[in-house]
Length: 244
Image (cartoon, helix red, strand yellow):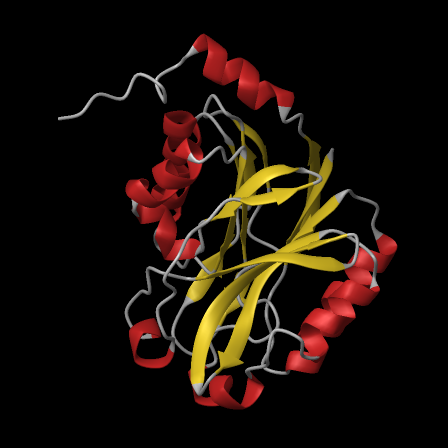
């Protein structure tokens, strides 16, 4: 299964960002296309309310029309609230969403908190989401792993100077849960931060299988979900957890 990590800068105009992603998807061959957190808007706080869309809005509809399999997050509005919502589109069909639970710093002033993290059954395997700051909470990843997640997607806007944390956290979440981590960070800067990229795929044994640099680029790598089952049979610590 060929995974494409689309590591981009995020501009201030939503239409430009969405068009950029659609061009990449059109011109690049992969089984799953993975986008950064809030790929269409970034954390442009003053315009977030204006740029927010419902789940059946234009942005998700345009992604669905590609007929491809795509993951990422966008700014969702629903019932007078705004959420940082992850989505998984499978061959043009929206089959699962996750509203970010752990909000960092200014996010708490704008985004409502999600209330559930669940495994999504897909043609690609059992998946879950850890959106950016979520990776600092091992309980979140462990819950998904115990429910059978084989792949955890990490769409992110992880800023400087925390690259060492990024790499360590991603490898730890993969190894302690014996699952694939597919993490896509943005590059460039916004009004508050600059971003270092280094999107990567980490194996169920915690090894970095591929890693981008600090510029806009698309990297790909093939993964085999069978390796998750193999790792969990060899190292059965998910089933050996004892009550403390």
